[in-house]
Length: 118
View: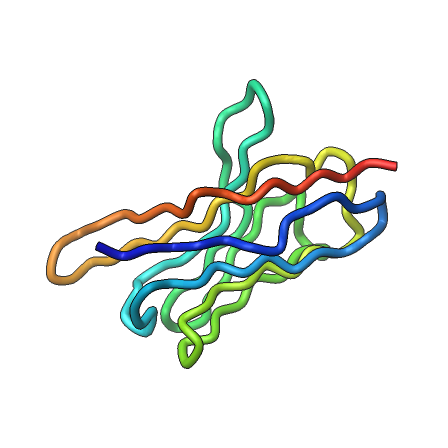
């Protein structure tokens, strides 16, 4: 059972930056896709950014040019650098991992709150 633990959330003013981290309990080298999702109050959980084992990235249109996803396989950690934060970025951010072998498994972290407000 893979454990994912997020950290780095908090309160930041508009225009500020935060870096989220997601530490995995085992090697992420073979994790097919890892990603960040977010869920605002009363809304569905949406994808923010994903990264494959090969380093291919995808971003939601709303965060392109402001957020950067990366993974450090040696440290078993996924990151999300968030710059130029806006109030509409306020949400609980969740780390996700998709593993294909030996069976298809989805794992989620417990979430970390990001609040953008003056």
